[in-house]
Length: 191
Picture 1 (cartoon, rainbow, N blue to C red):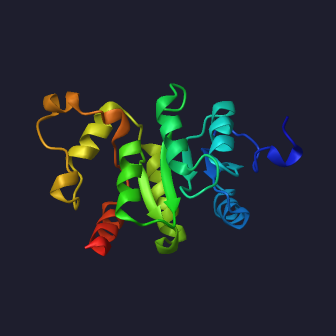
Picture 2 (picture 1 turned 90 degrees about the vertical axis):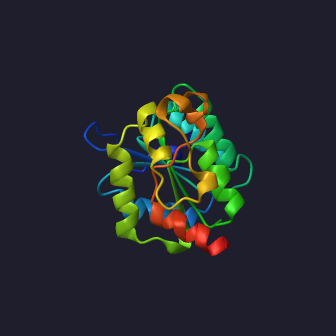
């Protein structure tokens, strides 16, 4: 049963892109709504399961997903999105405070389209990323192209080979259309 507070923050509109913000921190959710509500239809969810079911009710163009949440964490939620036929093509921007190498790689392999560290992003950069994600379709060709042209990734993270050789790669669960500069900064910080 939905409560009044469970309704979308901004009313549905066919000409406005729909952004789903999934984060357990109510202050951060409010910040995101403040940043986005003028230009996007915004729905919020307090954990991964809530976000997943809200996305099934009203499919978002982009989901902004925290990873560190109780219950369904962000990785479980991301995997659920990629496994569900109705949500597999939804763009997912991971926005979290975890910059560990293992977590970044896990998110990329689970199907994140972008990975941004909460403490290292600006409002303008965030909006540019959302705009780019809203404009790019999540297709098999774009996933392969992104994987093959990942500038700044260490060699062990790059997909090697010709496009026809990539058919054996599980590209449904590997993609990266995020900021290569931010990924490179995170990789450099690990070294």
